[in-house]
Length: 188
Image (tube, rainbow, N blue to C red):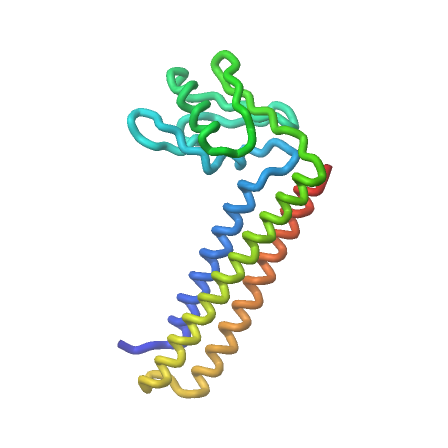
């Protein structure tokens, strides 16, 4: 098996991209003062004898800035959808209103906003740890490739430099995404 610097870089970049994608999903689920359908992306509903994502069983709209309207595709599932939203423990209370479910997003006080920002930065830090772990594994692969004789010392050093550049780039992207979420959360 031949090891190339490019194959190692591709693997490292893919791991870093996965960490950043995971952060983006995590940040979507952090509540802001406004209604956002993505708040319900993590909600699972027990329907038709199986666990399904909410968006596969219902339509979610934003009729008002602080309200979500969930309309199940099958009206027989309205109770199950409501239960799924409650189980998700998102800090919101679903109210069945005829053939739909209304969710009023409570106004957040300053303490709650700061708590949400803290959660966002905590998730950002976890993402950076995952990015650095990808860097460490990539550097180990480069060292193993050099010790096996598949790579020269110059290839190893060049690869390590490029991995560090990727690490810096992905950490900056994580910070930027979190800063944008912080502004969104703190906006009244």
